[in-house]
Image 1 (cartoon, rainbow, N blue to C red):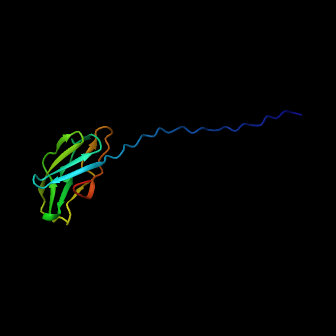
Image 2: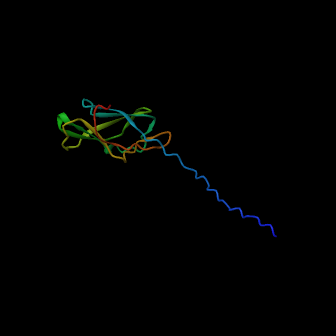
Image 3: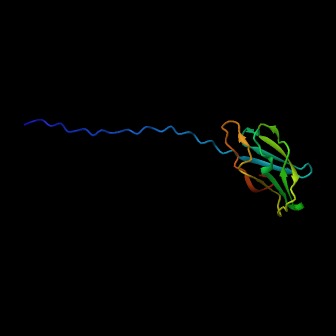
Length: 128
């Protein structure tokens, strides 16, 4: 009687995919509007780069004055985590509260990993 050797099934191992870590979101930790100087000061959770900032994407509705302001000119990096943006009257009507809005394409990014700030929609000022 012949000896039969059972076939061992070939097992393919999956290659481990190298996953690129997703950068942590850049978070706004404080925002303060100064109606006397017409500036908005934004503070983030880590160092930022404002080389590509689009100041026109940042706006403030000054509720008590019922006026809308938008960023203009050059932004100023006050500390590695804080930027000041000058505002000019836009002519639009503001809402009942003082709020900050900024589009996702505002150009503010984290220095360490390049994570972009997603912006804000009607964040009541001062924040937090």
